[in-house]
Structures are given as structure tokens and as C-alpha cells.
Image (tube, rainbow, N blue to C red):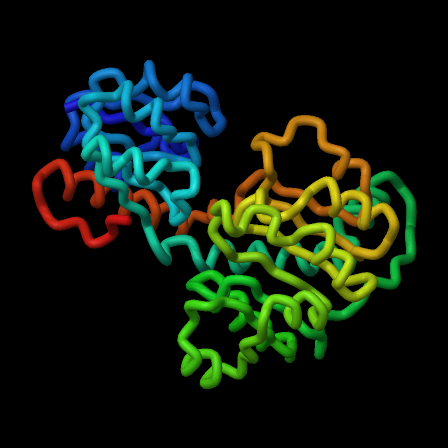
Length: 315
């Protein structure tokens, strides 16, 4: 049996328990040679003869699936499936799985790392201190401020718990959230307009769909408090990047923490010119603990499907 493995953290030199299990199950493993998410035309030749794929954030379009007749399962190494054409998967008899909850603590940690880096200007101060300067920077505090969470799933809840340590007021917007959970944990559920208008800090934790594309639009950005901060550790397409850039330059938006981008890798981005932007390379889920959990779950999901067993995490 031939399996394609595309996440860059599961390379040919990986000797984790998950990879040992996969090697004992498969006859042949094929790996991502590019070091980045794969486009459709890159996936097709790699999938030749493959029964399954442990997949990163690659682009599984209808064309990919139509040209991979032996493919039975796409097992996402992560939660999001926005880059998998689910309708095409169903039409071609391909099971899609994911790893819900495996990376929620890691992503919540990076969310707060980006927030703290922004409000205390840590990257700029680090760089200038190394250059021999001794700069002063005022910064602002998280303590007692309002944190808005857009998407109160496993990651949003983990972010809310961390906000409690900073005595923050927490607002959340999510039509599917259990109101009982929110009430029990001191989270005020509000509509989108209220969330945008009242948040000092806005953290994004939604999947990317046609409905959520550019949900943080030019109008939403202008409705935010002057000097408010945004952190996006979800998907790049949630923010209208052109509008955000302009409002960051004007100072209406105080700062932006970006782990994800509309185009990945982003290449040369105008955001990189701005000192009130902190960037990381889609790395929120990449802790030792999260990568192990995602590897374990994604490999087991794939094996369960291809062995004819019951997979608990089909999409």
C-alpha cells in the first residue's frame, strides 16, 4: 500500500511513534519534496498509486481527486478542511478525516504570544537592543481590557481560559456555542457588530469558508476602536488584508499579529514594512505536544479507514 505524507513536520527522517506505525502499515511512503503546502498540480503526480494521504494544508481540489483514482482517504494533520473540496471528495468516494482538539492548546498559546508581542512591541525592542540601542517603549496592558473571540470552539475556549489569567473581560461571537458553557465561564455572547465595536483585542478562530471570507472587512475594521489589536491564528482569508494594511498605516488599527495569510507562503508582503505587525509562518500548531497529537490522530484515522474500521473523526 502506498501513502503520501505532506506535512513538513512528518518528513522522511521522522522517527516518531506515529511514523513508525505508518511505516509498519504501508509498503511505500511518499513525502512532500517542497517544504511548503502543495498546490493541486503538485499533488497529482505525488498521489499516483496512493491509497491514502496524511495531509497538511494542501489544496485538494476536485481536479486533484479526479486524477487520483486509487485515493480512498485524506487524513488531515490538523482541524481545518477548507482546502479540501468536500463535495468532490464525496463524489469520488474519498473519506476525509481531521484531528479536532489536538492543537487547541498550542494555538491558544501562540495567540497570547502574539498579543503580548504586539502590546509590548517585543520584536522591535529585541532587534534594537541587539543593535546596541536602548529604546524606551510605552506599550499597553492586557489586564482588565476586553478580549473579543470570534469563534468559540476548542481553540477559542482555550484562549478565553488564558484571558482569565489577565483579568480580561471576554466577549465571544459564535452561533453554534453552548450558551451554558459561556455563562458558566464568564463569557458574554454578543453579536458580530458588538464584538467588533467593543473589543480592545480581537482574536480570530473561525474556519475559512465562502461565508467567512473577509469577515473582517474594511467596514468591520473601521468599526473597531481606534488603536485596537487583532490576532489571526486561524486562516488568512478571514481578513481583508488590503484594508487592514491601510488602517494599520493610518494608526486606526493598533497592531496585527499574523500566523496565517491569504497566500502562503506570503513572499514579499507590505505588512513586513510595518513595526506594528508581528508575523509567524503558520506555526501556531507546531509544538512538540501538538505535532505528536496530530500525527498520532491523523495516522490512526488513515489506518482505521483503510483497514475498514471505524474512524471517529470523519468530516
